[in-house]
Length: 94
Image: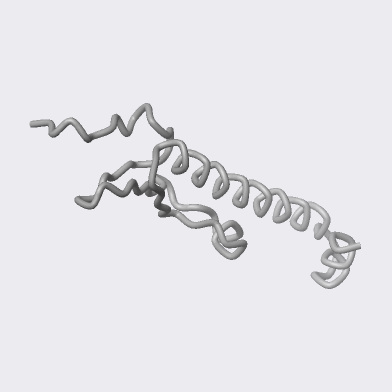
């Protein structure tokens, strides 16, 4: 049964499940957890908004945080081959 308020989660925001609360607030929860690096960088796996457009913007923001964190982690990992952690970190920061 449909109440006319539901959205199509598969096509609305790929990779995110959408929920419409009883109060009319939209929520999105990421289907796959973010990496540990993304989590530590502040990427949130569940977000909310007042409109689908705002929810899309917020999920895009979370994906960008995760992408940046994953890129930084890859740089550190690649740079760290054969180095101490302090040497590798010093190269990434400088």
